[in-house]
Image 1: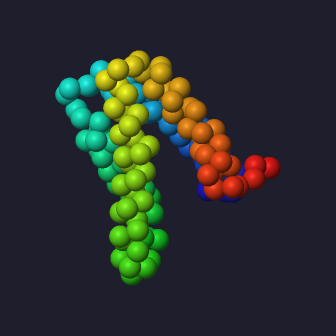
Image 2 (image 1 turned 90 degrees about the horizontal axis):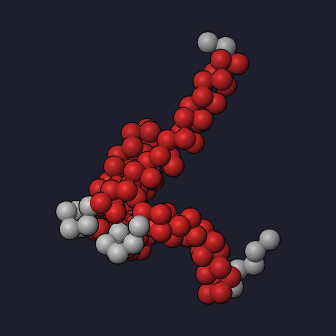
Length: 129
């Protein structure tokens, strides 16, 4: 396989992933809205992050194995940061599924990067450039 076909194959994979990601988010938001009372927000967030972790582990298993000692030493930090990300980012938005539409939930997610930037300026004193 020559370099041009490898590049074309990578471009094709990138295109599929670019279309697949919003599709998965949309399915996720629809499930959040249609599942209140059936699946709790914390379980939904945990399941989503667990699945994402398995996929990432499959992709990066060789690097994870090479750095297993360092990862083991810092496992507590990873668990705390992962739990905060799961509950702060995921569960609160899923909790909104009890009272709002999937469109509103997607708008909350879409605003998150802007709110993070504003929070960084206000509370951390960072400068936007």
